[in-house]
Every structure is written in C-alpha cells, then in structure tokens.
Image 1 (cartoon, rainbow, N blue to C red):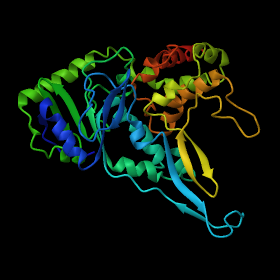
Image 2 (cartoon, helix red, strand yellow):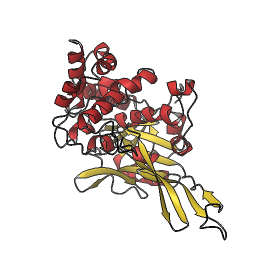
Image 3 (cartoon, one colour):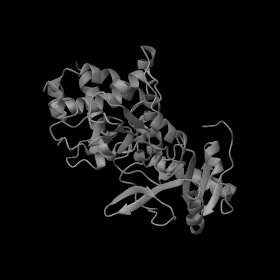
Image 4 (cartoon, rainbow, N blue to C red):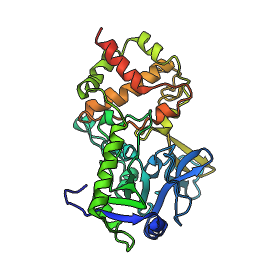
Length: 366
C-alpha cells in the first residue's frame, strides 16, 4: 500500500473486455465466471465469460493459496535407488508469473490480511523462537494485484462492518472498481493498481463520477444495517475463553451442524493445510492441500486418540480461533472478514454471528 494520492479513472463497459485482454497479455487474470449455479474464479485469457452481476460463491483465495500444490518433487537416483542409502533428488516447481484478481469482493481482499502475518512468520510465536516464512504464498502474494469490485448492496448474510470492513473497503486492494452508469470508476489504492490503468481506454474520471461513486458506497454501507458496538465484539475474545469448558453451551450451538466443512472451504481466511507424499515407484511429490478443522480427522492422532472427536469441540475451535485465539496474537484483528459465505452456504443454517453474540451474553452471566 502507498500514501501517495492517485487519480481515479473511468472505463466504459464496452471497453472492459479489451482492457482485460490487455492485462492478460502481461499477467494471468482471474475473474468470476458462472458455472452452473455457482460463480467461481477462473483464468480469463480473452476477457470473455465474465460474471458481472452475481456475487461470487467462493473467494479467490485459491489464487494465492492453491487447493492442492506440489511443494517439491523427489526421485531416487542411481543404482541404489531402491535402497535406504540411495541419493534422492529434490526439485522445486517453477514459480508462477504475475497474476491479477479481477472482481474480488472487499471482504475477500481483507481475507488475505489474515494470511499475511501467519505465512510471513509474524505473531507471538515469532517472539518465542520464530517460525519459518512460507516462500510459496509470499511469492504469489508479491506478484498478485487485486482489483476489488465495490458491492452495490449487502446480503442479509453480510457482516463485514462487524469486523472492520465495508462494501467499498480498500484494505488489501490495489484497485477499487465501482459500477456507475455506463462503466466502472477505477480508484487506485497502490502503485501496482495505478500501473494497471496504463491503457488508452482508462480515461481520467470526472468529478461527478467520483461523487456518484462515493454516494453509492455510502448507500451500500447503509444497507448493512447496524453492527454491534465495537466494544461488545471485542469482548468476544474473553467470552469465548470463559466458555471454553462449557460443553453444554457448545452442544447447543453445534446441534444443527452437519460437520460438512462447507464453512471452512468457502472461508477466505481459513489457512489450514495437510501434507502428504504421493509417490509412484521411485518418484513422487510432496503435496500441500487444504484441510478443515471441522473434519473429524483433522486432529486424529497416530495413537488413535482424537481430542476433538465431537463436532461441538470442532465448532468451538473454529469460532474461538476466528474471534479469540487469532486476535490475541495478531493485534486484535479478527480472523473473519464478514463475507457471510459460511452462513449463506451452510445446509443447516448455522450462523456464526449468532454464536458469537450468544457467547458474549452467556459469558456475562458466568
């Protein structure tokens, strides 16, 4: 991010495809596309197939943190390839080139801010021995520009304003795009975002266009309704800890949960993974794949013991991590961006907002 003041630009909807095609000549462009009943992010090499109206079902988290990726490949070498003493050749995959995410929601751009301190080796753990930086994530992070498309209005599952965001938040964004009549107002938020506007169809925005965008942002903010007082939400840290041993409370909150894991796989801030070695003969690869703390296998130990065998314990961990454990070591920032996907896509209507408020209320009487 930069403190420099940038000049907004305007591009017509007719010229949008041409601009995206030009960007795709320099970077891999990921944009929302409708597939069946879902809206997902796909590579958009030619600017076609862009979904401009429906809200993305998923975030673009997988662009920086792939669902499954090879950390390195390995192969036994020489005559002793089958022996334990044989040499093993390791090879890292080639790094990807520059990428652009077009049409991210503001909450999704803020979601990466939950990843950054974890994969950059920051937090309390660093002070007690240090943790390694993740070169795979950090390389993609540095090479990816994020174009946020401001929300026109909120869904009843949205609560980004609870956790410090908003429909047109620029936190984590390089460029903010706002839908106006006939085109998009493009407001740079960083040097990288400003560089994306070096195209003949991106013309300087008029004062009335800038004013219209500000009015739309304010209207979208109002559509969110009232958020709980900041002090009340801050109290969730202590409240969830106070209820850590209250099994009756967590049994009630998890009664509807099916442990399907949809909430974690759709969450822009969930960053857990599993490591597996996949081999075929003397060659193979070490893979990193998304994992879910809502899965019964997530904490299963080799001994057969599982400290979170019950779904109530798993839900407690998920909610507690986002609103208590993570904020405790990351300067009070919640590990939740308020996108509401975990509410919208839950097959049994579990609502994390209600759980947090119930915890605050319950803890007040402990």
